[in-house]
Length: 193
Ligand code: SF4
Image (cartoon, rainbow, N blue to C red; front, side):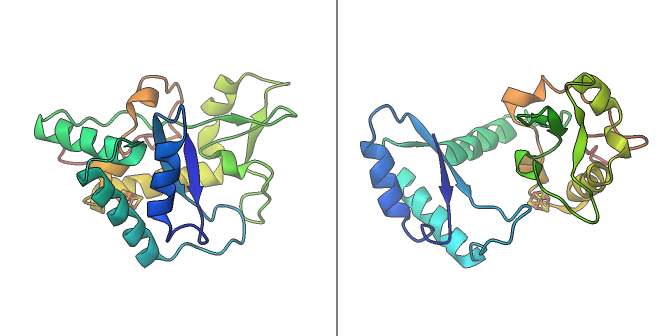
C-alpha cells in the first residue's frame, strides 16, 4: 500500500504505523511524503520529515511487524553495498499515458500540468505513435534534458547518489529509453565502476 504523508499527517507517524499494522491484508506500506510537483501546495517542513523517518526507524528497531517499503529498500541497499553489489543501470523514464492518449515522461504528476517553460510536458500521443518513438525523441524535451543534467550532477557530487540515484530492481531491466543526444539517461559516475 502507498500512504501519502501530508503536512497534516507528518507528525503522526506513530498513528500511521498503528493504523497500517492493524489493517488486514496490509503486508507492506510505502510512505510518500507529498511532493510539490506542479502545484502550489504547502510543503512538508524538512525537520518534520526527519522526525517522521526517525520515528519509523524506532518502530522498526522495536520490532514492528509492519513492513515499511522505504526502510526495506534502505536495508537492501546497505546489504548490497556491503556485499559490493551496487550497480548503476539506466533510469526508468516512467512513461505515463493519460485517458486521451497523451504521454508524459519522468513523473505521472506532470500529466495535465502546463508551464510557460515546459509547455504541457507531453512527449506524444499513443493514438498516433508508439511510446518507443516518443522515447527516441525524449532528448528534444527541455524538461528531460534538464533532468538528465541534474541526474549527472547528482552522480558527480552527492554522497547519497548510490542509493537515491540507482534504479530500483523492478525497473532496472525494463528500461528501453534511448538516451537524449549526448547525455546518458543514466548518470555515469566518473571513477566508479
Ligand atoms: S542524489 Fe543526492 S542531490 Fe540528487 S536527488 Fe538524491 S539526495 Fe538529492
